[in-house]
Amino acid sequence: MNLYFVRHGQTIYNKLGCYYGSLDVPITKVGQSQAEKASEILSDVDFKKLYVSERSRTVQTADIILKDKKINTIVDKRLNETDFGKFEGKNYKELSKLFKNEFEAWNSDWKNTPPLGGESCIQTYSRVSSFMDDILKLNEDNVLIVCHGGIIRSVYCYVLNSIDFFWKFNSLNGDISIIKYEYDNLYIDTIMHV
Image (cartoon, rainbow, N blue to C red; front, side, top):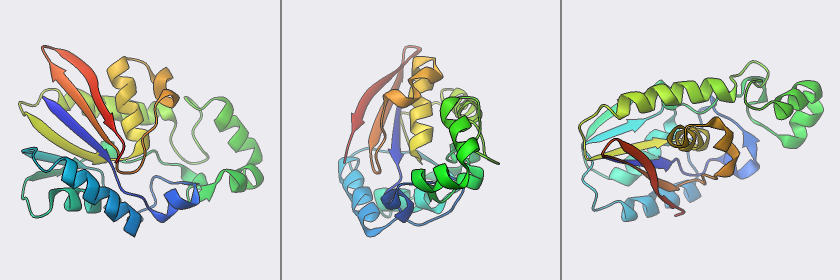
């Protein structure tokens, strides 16, 4: 089985360096271009299933990648980006001023401490693990999964059996990651910047 994870195209909040997960914002023209490049790279892959998060930026990216191809699409909330609570839509500088103590606590224990009113990395990882457990039961050759940077990092952690690897990888807008599952072995095959 080949799992093709694609991070959604750029949004205005990516451009501004803001934390956001629950905010539902569209992709920019740059984001559309990134999705077009991903579409070219993946044009020969015969996808039978598409999974997307509940956010419009993943749906827009998937629509551009697949063009007019009609495939079975599943919206799965487990693929939603981390909920950053009160930190949503704010950048590092703003958070260090507005929520100094909470922001410092979050930075000092990023695995277990949630952003104010949001969810912790462990909580995100838990739902991603549940998603991956279910995906590995599928009998499909090629599955397209369009989601978010934090989710893709969590998938890498799932493959490596430890959340400690979360900050050891990057996932840029439009990136394609291919995770393979063969002979009961799950591994990262490819990480491609578009």
